[in-house]
Length: 509
Image (tube, rainbow, N blue to C red):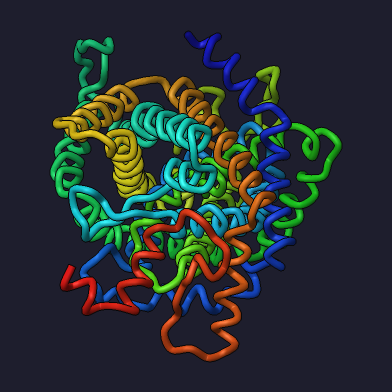
């Protein structure tokens, strides 16, 4: 099984995917005239705008749900793995893929808004994502087939492969703090008692939330995500401030290591892009699900908000982790042959785990450091699992919307909880490798698809230009008329515009 997983990873995460992620980000950045820079102020303004309607969730809540998926163990264990296998230069390539990926996030999230639809079971909630926008844009049998392919891959990825990575990070953080505890025989083999307690806590709280739907998930994440991200960044700022004299040399190390002959064309760029995409999810097709659930006046608005979420994830949280690890020197670097290029820690320190980060904080704050990182990982990972569940649920709803079915969402809840339990007790490297397959698969399908859409009709660029024209005109309330703009298949927005023009007629009907 491990050989099969390694083979699949080698095929999926080959150089073409790495350059596709970077190339797509550069392509969309140029064509949108680097909207991620030009509209930074507008992103902040939109975040503060409340949702006064009963439908959907607010832009901030959608951002929180999306960030709950983006900000996870990838920001702690994932950054550690990037440094451990790709060297300090991998951090630079994480920055690059984040900056360019913000435009990719705008494109995919705006598409989700343009082609979203009302939930058939709850008209006050919206559904959308890659499966929806590919079906509606391409139309016919081809659009339906590609939508089904995306839906199935996202269900497998977010329902089976990825939740285990988050749970594994929590379990390893607990054992780093408290040890394994007494060993217990389970169906997965011998497992430490402390790890089992961590799994039980996750499963109980997870079940209480996911049975409450998107609004309960949004209400939880809008409180937890800002709190956990801010606390984590404050801790990193304290460590950086206490070692401020080292900061210039660390920045120099990151940049110089990124462009060495070995790193620039090998480990650093490969691991930087892989862990960057894993962390910020730009182009992966997961963020658009939360974007579609938001209630906004214009599709471009939520696209901008989701672009900002990439900044928060990588440029803030991932950078915080990287600087803590590199400033304190609590890391090893291992090449493909398994040899240590840099060794500051014992050889048995697990690279694909939160160990580097926990040891970095512990080197400055003692035992409190390990506990703090363990708590951060719990919240980071837990909210990410919530986001994964919502994505899996949305795609199950997509597959079953044309016929009535009972129990399908209940099955999703059970499966994701089983995936969490299995991932928590599995080996870190093995679980991360499975997660990489899920990320790579959906990234291939989604990025190729949105590039094809862009060449065929450019609906997201058209939406951006329309929004900018309304901005210049100084309108108080933005509107979106897809038919006027030549955008086909945006049935939700066509219906909304019709209701706004003829409210009496629609009420009578």
